[in-house]
Length: 180
Image (cartoon, rainbow, N blue to C red; front, side):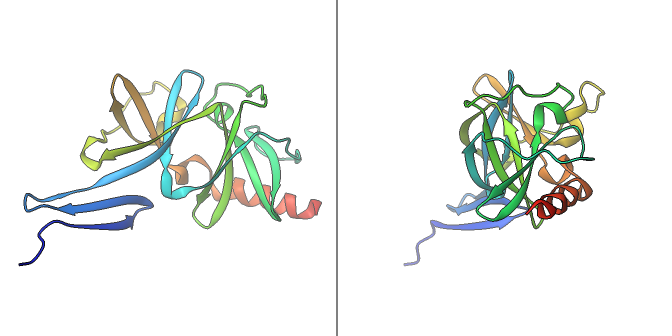
């Protein structure tokens, strides 16, 4: 007799998808690393996260976007570090040793995002993700791929590819290489 309870793990569009078949159909699960910026909670696809580290000083570079804090040498790899609070129009983050940098991949490139704190790893069913309402409420709406309600809080899911254009990332990496 064949086992009808089969599970498989797949990566599609950068998201972890767990497919479980129990005779009633498939369920897809997505996983996100959640973090805070002020009172807001955001999530980024766990498959794009490469490392989470405490804040350390960066090397400032000339002629870079105001939301770029500088570059960091991460074991020989020059990684541009972006201040998400500033990227979302909330001003510069006054960093302390409590702040965190999440190293993510955007396409083939590594980028660091400065956040206040990492919250959790969130596993949700794909059907729980809701679209972002079309309104001109905040500048960060264009960077969102969806919204999800977890208990009594709302988590905004970021689309890392829309957060930074390749010019910003390339500019940071090239200028960092020139410093070596």
